[in-house]
Image 1 (cartoon, rainbow over the protein chains, first blue to last red):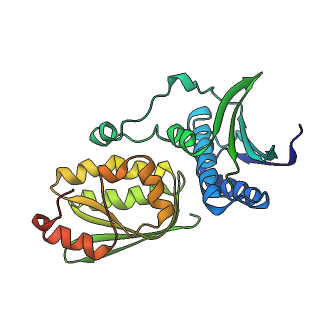
Image 2 (cartoon, chains in turn red, brown; image 1 turned 30 degrees about the horizontal axis):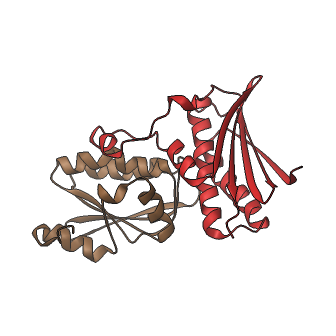
Length: 141
Length: 123
C-alpha cells in the first residue's frame, strides 16, 4: 500500500524553527481529518523528537538540517524526522524518575518518554549516514 | 522570541509570573531567566499563572524541575495555576501533580501562601 498526500519540510537545526515544525505537522494532521486532541499529541511528540535531534544529534549546530515528512497510510498518520547527526540508542533510555530529577535539579530526559506515551508506534532506524525516527498515530473514531 | 511572553507583578509579597503563548525549547530560557532573577533576589513565594499558556513541551517542564528545589530550600514554593486542560494533561503525563502544587486559580495559591496551615490535606 502506498502513502498518499506525503508532505515534506526541511529546517535548520535551530530551536527557533520548532514552532514552524509544530504548525506544519498540525496543519497536515488537520487536513487528514484528525481531531484537535489528537493533533495536540502529534504536535508535542514531533516537537520533542525535533528538540532531541537539535540537542543530542547535532549539539545545537544550526548549520545542520532536519527533514520532517508527514503522510497518511491505512488511516494512520505517520511522521518521520531524519537527521545526519549522532545516533540515538533507544536501549539506553529508561523511564524518568521525576522525583529524583527534581531533587537533583536535573531536567531533560523526558522527551522520549512523552513521545512513547503520545504516539501509537515509535521506531528508530539508521541508514547509511542518516537517522530516522518514525512515529505513527492511529485515527481513533 | 516568537509567541511567548512573561508579565511579572507582585501582590502581598508574592511574585506572580503570568506566562503567555508557547513554551518550548526555544522560549524556555526566557522563563528560566525570570525564575533565576527572582531566586537570586531570594524571592520565595512564586506563582506561575498559566492562564494564557497555550502550549508546553518538556523543555518548559524542565525549567520547573530545575528550580523548584532551590525555592523550596528557601522555605517557599512555586505554585502553578490557571492551566487549561491541554497544558495540564502534559504535566499530568509526567506525574507533576504529585510533586508540584497545581491549583485552579491564583486566589487559591495566594491563600495557601498566606495561610499554609489551612491547606486541605490530601485525601
